[in-house]
Structure formats: structure tokens, C-alpha cells
Image (cartoon, rainbow, N blue to C red; front, side, top):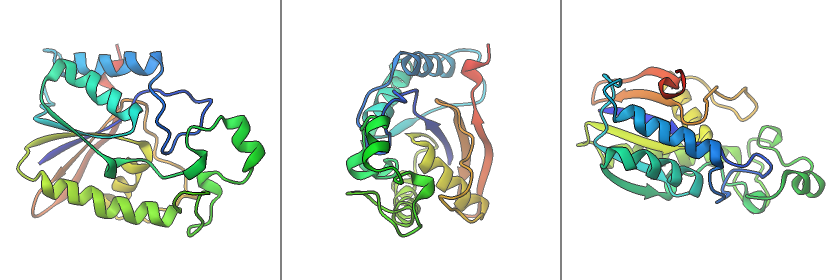
Length: 203
């Protein structure tokens, strides 16, 4: 089973992400369209997509929909693929968040410490460890699956497959917006083929 993890396109960086349901900005729309064009073009020799599953948050959903305008495959949206739940900070202007909650940054939280109204890094890790692989099992008959999600989710999956310790205190995996990370999972092995590729943005 080939799985292509795609990070969503650009959103408005003036606002906190997490469970924010704000849409893509123009540059994010453009990158998602370019990825759809690339995947459906003769230039793409290696990636075939049979189905898309996306986080249901707007920035991921829009990315998936724009890609699928060119692919026309079965698509679904799944809440389990959401980014870390940052509670009442989701979609809040950065300036306001810093004033009201100056210490509420993902990298500064203690492992068991929750965002106000949200989840802790520990809860986020265990949620993705459980839910991501449940989704893979549910779609085991799909040979080529695209999952459109968030950097935090992809980072956790990468750490699990790499057998590396994950921590919110460590430097995040470098994943450009709309980048592709390929993993191959079957009954006997789990392999990371590449991380954060952007062939659609290189020309």
C-alpha cells in the first residue's frame, strides 16, 4: 500500500492554526492547484492516486478538493486527521493570543499540559498513533492512498515509522506547504520512501 501524505496549502499566518477552520489564502490555492496539475500530467511518472482522505478542517479540505478537481477520484473527510487541538486559541489572531495566553505555544507546553479548552501534546500523540493507523486499516484495499493533513500529524507518523522518540520540544520536521511524503505499509514492513517533496513547485 502506497500512502502519500500531503501537507495542506498556505493559510493565513496572522492567525493561530491547530483546529482553526480558516480557509487557504491565494498562495495556498495556487500551490494546491499546481499539485493537482502535476499529478494529472504526463510529467508525473511515479505517483498514482486511487483515493483521497482529508482532514475535515477547511485548509486541508480545500487543498484536497483542489487536487481532486484534476484527479477525480473518491474523496472523503475525516476528523481524526486534524492537527493538534489548541482549544480556544484556534483561529485567534496571534497578537490577541500572545496577550491573553503568552505561554500557550505548542513547543512550550509540558507534555501533559493542555491548551486552554484543547488537548496536550501527549493526548495529540496518542490520538494520532491510534487514529492514523485505524484509517490505514480501514483502507487496506486501496493500493494508492493520498492523505491530506497537517504538519503535526505527518511529523508524528514519521517519528513512529522511524522508531524515533517524538516530543513537542524537538524541532519540527521540515515540510513545505503542499509537500508530499511517501510511505509504504504492508503486512511485513513499514517504509518511509521520501519526505517533504515538492516536484510541482520546482519549475
